[in-house]
Length: 435
Image (cartoon, rainbow, N blue to C red; front, side, top):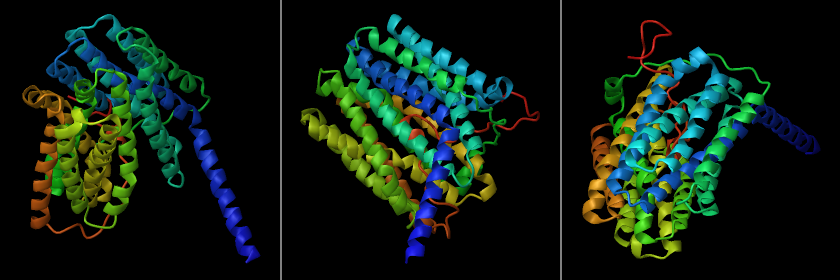
């Protein structure tokens, strides 16, 4: 017994040493990422709140919200050839410099036209930054410690985005101070990376996109990814408009969005664990049923409820809406061949980005006719349609005989994209830019 206890303690020390060494190898990059995402979290809640204070219509808020994801999709598409030409460190420095200028210009030029251009630029910059970050983490990780490294990345992502939301409480969003703070945070993110002595990773890989093959392979995976993009894109673009109808205190937007983010973080793993043990489509159907009911409850009761009740419903919505993408991706990979995982991920990310662009353009129509809660009625409709389609597919197709791999968290729920386009459309020459 004493020998067994000694061996167990020794194994624990070895595991602890491996974890420390794995995180130490990417500590500078993780620190820079934490600072960067704190700034992004603040900017994500500040802009719609300021737009509401400036009497922007829901259509206008949805429009510049959608342009962020349009820029993000373009950045994911073009990021790899840019990094291949300039290198990871130079591209990280260039994108943080450009991304830090955008918040200041938002505060100086408060009009729809300039904000659309600036949001497009911000989305592009952050997409390229995520390509740099995630390809760098993959390069510095091994099969033995990659789970530890990306778990730390996920934890940092969800935590600092929530912290960024709360930083809205530090000053008046009608003034320039919070825009300046966002700019400072994004600029400071470059310091740990630029001062690190770690060598740059190798070139990121490319992968082809084939939506027709994805549709033949996993219709539920494709439609579920589109629905996730529609719902999540609408939330990030228009949640502050909904809160403004419920309270004229801008701080309430920070509290509501923080509760949704934390709910999304808490909901990922239980639902993922469940989906590894049953047909994932049943989990997706359950998510859709719950998501439709919670969305309808917020749309029906939200503006009349006290803060604690709205935050609880928001956390419930996040716990259902954010894992939708993760479950859909896992289901698509269940039907994919092992050598096509990267291609499937790239194709699904394109679909998600399309949904995140389209959703903020459609939802304001519901808000114009149903008031600010129309945003959640739109979400209820998306969940309901996906529920019906998923049940039809369950009836028509047997479940996958085996899973190629367990559920893995996907970061799109937090406005990042895990494995963000580690490649793009194939071209004849390796260094050609995608058409």
